[in-house]
Image (cartoon, rainbow, N blue to C red; front, side, top):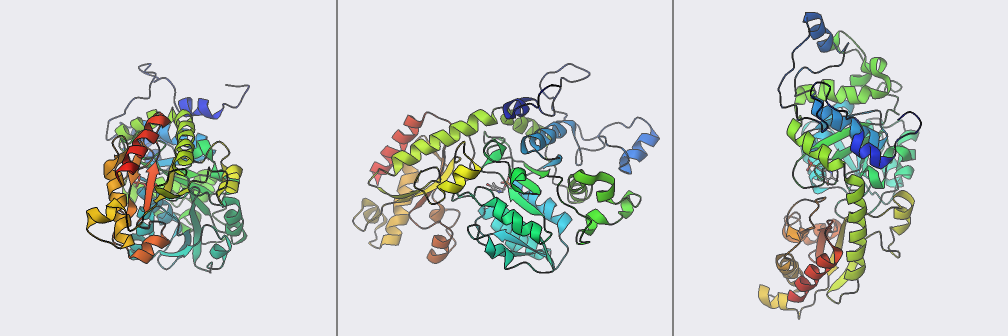
Length: 445
Ligand SMILES: *Cc1c(COP(=O)(O)O)cnc(C)c1O
């Protein structure tokens, strides 16, 4: 398309793909092979020395995976990307390039629960130390930066609370201190919000959620914004110092604004190994073709359900940033004017006198709230009770009896997962059917 830069929906269908050169196949084939034949011995040596790009072994590159990478890089406005086995694997590979034992990074504590575990436990075992800050208070990031800080990490739209982060304010702090700013854009997707346009240097995703979009494949991706100067401080030696296994090349010198994308593949994925299967890459690629249609529908449906929910007598509060009087609404309008996404929480109105207390055989309010939450999720018929978000199907969890059950009551409340809290991921069904399902489940408590 020589005369015009393609729009987002066109990129979602076409970026990175072309009819297959040998067979004419129009859909990207699933290249289900472990390895690829070298043209000759020189070709093999060039590939191993990073002097030429090409396919060697599916742990490191694969043509189906490559289309997925080009497509997500195009949608986010990055220079290059690396697709991997899961969102957690994407995070691990990014930090593996940036951190040495004893270094630290600052992360918002408003994160997906799996990321809180990964940063606090697994990364701690590697000697990579996390310091927690408050996404709603950009100054809390700056206060904790010291000489061993190597990065700042936030979610653009937080899981599970569904609140937008002021990423420009936090990007300014990161750059004032010469630090790369990493944004997890899983809940917003590039359809609603492109963090690289607001100062992020690296974007990560769980492809499992809205990008794949159908709850059928786990995957993750790292997008290189191409904006960060990896050589200036000397703090990122994997990018700025010669690599012995690649004939002494310096990745930042050799690859410029795609150096991070090359490093996470040629050092991280090569040595740590969490590659995505060609089949999962294909499923996710197919899902991305309808991302603009789905994401708008997810957001419109969620607003309809949230608007209805807040009028119900069994509902104490609804925490959806798309509601015009929500405290986070101004940030939503600024960063994501097309919609507020699919994921939000609401609180059940619980009193001692409710049937829930009787069923649970208890009279205190906390137990009544837990019992009410359990009755509610069990009462739903269309909406599925499971641990995922971003499916075409609507999903629900009651965090206090599942993901957050091991925490104390105070910890649950601090995490936004008190006993009365229900989390919804609204799908693309008819909104009237979702409302009817919730109505009948609320009546059961
Ligand atoms: C699910 C999720 C992850 C982890 O992704 P997996 O594909 O499950 O490994 C990371 N961040 C966010 C915001 C998520 O929702």
